[in-house]
Each structure stands twice: as C-alpha cells, then as structure tokens.
Image (cartoon, rainbow, N blue to C red; front, side, top):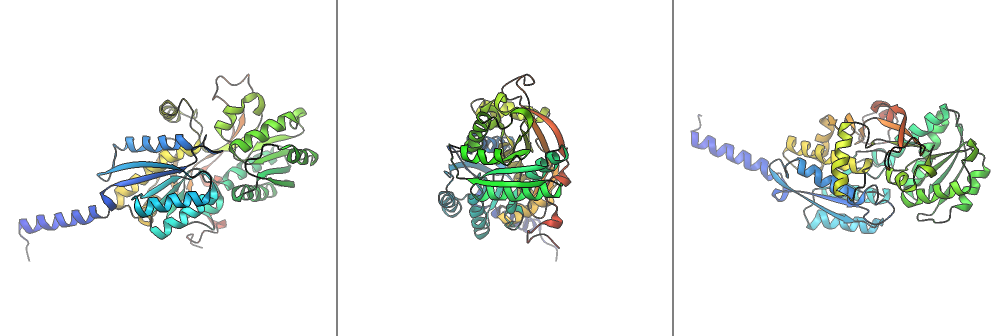
Length: 403
C-alpha cells in the first residue's frame, strides 16, 4: 500500500521523535568526580574540570543536538563520599557519564554502580590495571594510563640499562599494591630481581624508616609506588638521605606526575625516570591545548589525566552522535567501535576490555642546566608503541575478552 505524503511525514516525525527520546532528560550531563583539595588535586582537580568544559565548548555546547552540562564534585579521597556523590548524580540529578576519578577504590565502586544504573564512566586518573582486567565492565573505559603500562615501560627499559635489582616503596592501598605487583612481574620478565618491598600509609610525612630499608637493600633502582604529596615527600627525603648520590641507586617514579616534578624542581628530581602518556611539549597540538587550559587554571600546566578528560569526552560525544542514545552500555560499545584520532595522545583505539591504547613514553627528568623553563622538565628516553604498551589481551582477565 502506498502511503500518502502526509502519512510519510508523520512516520518520519515519529521515527525522529523515537530517536531523540533515547537521550534521557533531553540533555547530556557529565559529572567530573575528582580530588579538589587532596593529594591528587594537582594532576586532576580543577584542571580536569576545565578540561571537560573545554571539550564541551569545542563541541559547541551540544551533543547529538542536545545541550551539554558539566558538573563537578570533590570525593575527598573517601570511597563512601565518592559513591554517595555518584549515586546522587545518577539517581536524582540526571548525570549520564562520570569522568576522571583519581583513587582506585572510588573508581571501582563507581563503575559497579554505573553498571547497575546503565551509565557511562570514563576513567582518566584511576590507574589500577584491574580496571581493564578482572574488574572490567561494559560501562566504563580506561582512557589515559594504567599501572601495567607504566611499570612495564619503566621496569623493562631500566633493566636493559643495567638496573637489574629493585626495591619498591609503595602506598598502602589498592593502587600501591597493584603497582608493586605489576612492577615485580615486569622486572622479573625483563631478567631483573625484586629484592624488597615496603608499604607506607597514605599521607605519610616521615619516610625515614622506609628509605633506610630501601638504602640497606642495595637495590640499584628504588621505585616509588605512590603519587601526589606522598611521592613528593619521599623524593625530598630520599635526596636528604643521599640515596642517589654517587650513582649507586637510582629513583624511578612509578606514578610521578608533572605537577610533582614542577613543584620539587629539577635540582631534587634530576635523573629520575618515569612513564607518561602525555607531555605538554610533545607537539603543536599538545602545546596549543596546554596554552588554553593553563590560562584557565592559574597558569598550571596539564598532565595526562587532565588531557585524558578532554579527549575522552570528545570521543564519548562521537559515540552518542553515532548511536543517538546516552545509555551507558551502548555508548561505551560505540566508543570501542570508533577508532580514536586524538591530537593529544595520537591515533589509537579502545579495545574490547575497555582499555584505550596509545604510545607510552619513558622519560628522564632533565638537569637544571638542561631545563629552559619551569615546566621544561622531561627528555624522552624511549617510546613504547601503542600495541605493545599495555597488557596484551591474551593475558587479560577481563570477562569481556573473547578467549
């Protein structure tokens, strides 16, 4: 039966309305769950909020023709607080996706809630490799980095350069334990040996007893499995103890950040090794992004988590545009189908385990003489290609990975 023009128009309108109805509340709401005042605030915090806003502005304030709103909250590094915020956002405030989430325990709790509520989570700060391994879900992606990639890059390369004995000083919480386990595996595979480990409470001010253990181990490399203020205090006191003087022991920051190095200065950190997926001075695109976001964040230069927020939100928007829905599982599935073409991280893709892959860089901190400015602190030692940088799917414990 041939339909009249009026019926055809009505049918098209109904189909369009049905497609539009899949965008809940007729808008997209993105929540930045971050650390605004604690030990992770320098590499996430306000910078992550501004990165999300910049991404939305680049999109013209709309995704799939719907207005986009960015909200943010401080999880205070407390899992109960972070989970309560996420539950309120999902259940009563119409938040469709949560981004950032420094602190592994909070990220684990939020992604489980996202599965229950069928929302999306884009992790750019949380870095436990379990989040794309045994704890993977169809509702979240790991965008920026993870413990396996960083420890593999540092451990493998430094063993090659003669650093074949290791001691780990790590924070006593989930992420610190994961870093220790991943580094031990990387060092052993490369032919090195782990000679000792010690865990310290988060927020430790006095590292003397821990550093004495590291010094007495005579390990060639002392790895710091902590971040933020903890890592900064450990480096300061390691220098005071003279651990690296004479070249007998070297420091490797398993999760040291640009704000850490900037705050401490190259005099204290010179020669230290670390891994990163983003550096502000890598190319014209990273420099342009840095100029824009630093102007909005008191002149502070961005690090990988903040760059990750920006690029993850842009890819999230592509997925919504493609599927015409903000349902968490469908959006994440679409993010895996669409190749990433990222000016900040380079070409890549999101694998079936939710792990976004791109190159990982082994950096060494410059000497004060080599540095030309406050944030000119890294020189590239080695580059691990995207397909080699992260844990192979064949080794993955993610239940989403086809065996």
